[in-house]
Length: 111
Length: 115
Image 1 (cartoon, rainbow over the protein chains, first blue to last red):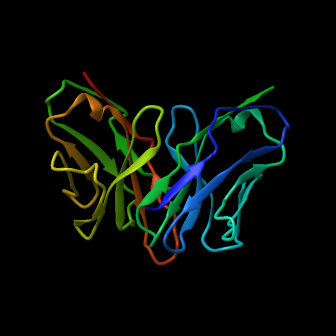
Image 2: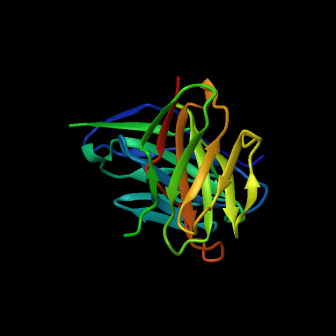
Image 3: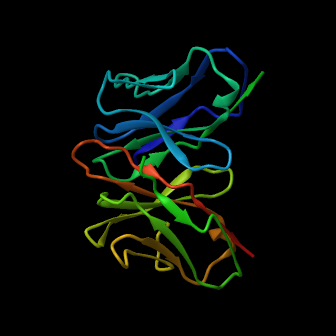
């Protein structure tokens, strides 16, 4: 079935380090892809999205490119901050209906 | 910015009791969803709802669960005869339409603890 696999955490980085969180997907059609972020004690917030191959989603310094050839949507940020500490979820949506989430990757950024 | 709101933020219930989780979706949205996140696990789709009926549901959403939009603003998830394994974070989400690739907007969740 349709699913998302993302890099297991936890990930611990120092401030200003480069971040990559890998995400790959399996889908029978052409999904839309998303990254959601969950800060401590809060709900899921959309971080960025891409709806077709080669689209790049970006927000708050984070980027992810929809790669159809590798079925991937890796999240990257050039210089992380302590405030980026959160759990990051990769997700896909087919036919714009229900979403399938990855297991989540906990990121901790230390000063 | 409009938000999806969920109440209560934390619900503690005895096993076997019924519980109703409440959500107020964004006011002009048409599609509504419930998801579940068991502690430390992934977010799982439960059900989607459109035009006053269920449009899709997962295998998790069995006869124990039901959803309702009783008054045009609230969207509720009812769990009958709760079990210990129903303990989880429950997220409500809503979307404006399906055509324009709008994302789902999530509430902050209700933490359900079954004792």
